[in-house]
Length: 179
Length: 137
Picture 1: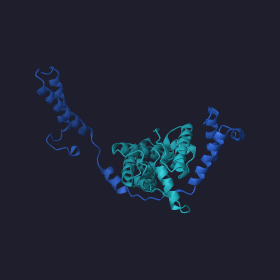
Picture 2: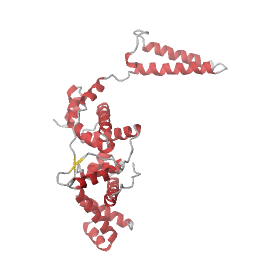
Picture 3: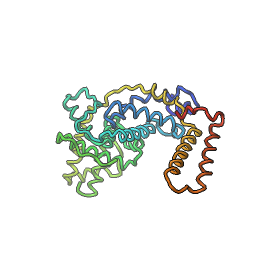
Picture 4: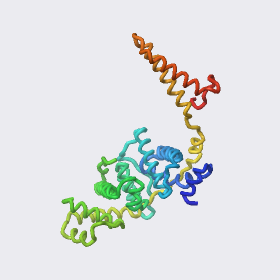
């Protein structure tokens, strides 16, 4: 059953319908939240908040839209709110993400990329990971991040440049001031 | 980037690399790169970064948040009468504290307002005015 039909069943009061949506997307959502929060426990709290907020706002869901892109906007909002409330550092130059796997790549290379990603600002890290790891197109990025395609391009370009600088110097890239 | 044209060229070249469409024709981009070393090196750096990130995947994570979400969905939201009781109590406490703190009596109309709030709160508890409202606890 597709997401739109599942949302319709939720709105009709079927108790198991929302569970279907949660179970379908919780792992994906946790991966995305961990990319922003850099901490599994905080990310899990943000995912729970996001599903609760989504449940309350289901009646506003436009069924012409992809469910997860709508949900992702709620999720990232919950992540940033929680990060602000818990004073999660925006950038941690020593942090590791533990979010990546690369069977064909030497471990040192993967760790270097992880460190460089972890040192990016959450906004930069998010756009780079959504593009390179999730393979989102610019139009999808625009829908998920709720920004125009032109902004996607410039944000992606700047994020890549900072990541490249961090990787090439082996130093943490400059913190992005964009939010 | 050197010029505003370089900005547009590099962004367009990046879009082409990502398989996107761009308003600037590929021929224009290629011609510009031949004459602009700055743009050529920027585009080459973008290409090499993309190649470096290609073998990286998102590690699989598993989550089971449904039990927590379900427990919170079952929790009743604050009822309108609960909100009236909470707001009314706070108003009456603040009014009483202000009255006790000031030497001069408060304006005459504050008493009927406070009385009105108390009546409203009583109406919210009309079933049993002494019942503890569980949703407030």
